[in-house]
Amino acid sequence: MEGENTAVTQKQVSQTYAIPFAIVIAGLAIAGAIYFGDGKNAAVAAQPTGSVEAVTSDDHIIGNPNAKIVIVEYSDTECPFCKSFHPTMQRIMNDYGNDGKVAWVYRHFPLPFHTKAPREAEATECANKLGGNTKFWEYLNSVFQVTAGNDQLDPAELPKIAESIGLDVNAFNTCLDSGEMKSIVDKHIDGGKKAGVSGTPFSIILVNKKPVSSINGAQPYEAVKAQIDELLK
Image 1 (cartoon, rainbow, N blue to C red):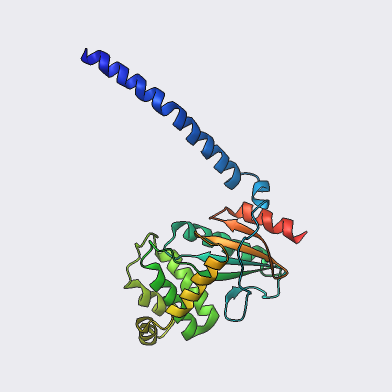
Image 2: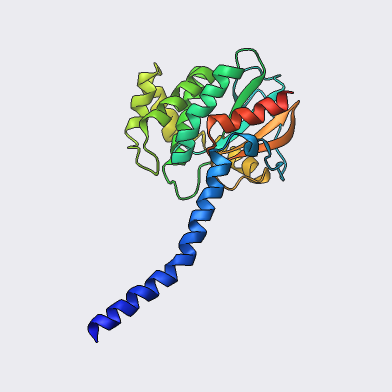
């Protein structure tokens, strides 16, 4: 009897999981087509539904501010997907930024469950205060290189990163400990919410300063390139 019950249980388990497993496989196939296809799917992205704040001189920008295409990214330094998307955007700027076709704007959107991300965002703003836009990007690049994501970055690394890019560590620590940059990060978060951002990375594509499309998630280089090429026509 015990053997029979075991056989019946195995059969029931097999039948129970057959359909859900098929659904999962189908879902993965669809996801693969979207994220790892030939780029055609990526060119058809949802238009932003919220109100996107205009890009100003206060933004952190790489490239020509008057470029036809400006990609406004909302990101979280402890988000592993943001970490993987960062090199994609660096490659995009290497290919499209030098001739002034595309610019990249970075805005903070630390997610609630990444408890270390807000302070890291403030650290990048302290780097900006002490060294301008260039040091902001150097600091941000270094954070993404060092952190493994999901709150694994030791806070003790923050002043070390500042020192590694040539900032005054004492001034950096004073800035970070004061909390004076929190209002800037909070402003970015509020703007992201108004723009309809709910996860990271989420990028809004502006064409001639008007939002026309979005990049939802850490899409691969080929997908982002396909969107840009279509919009540059």
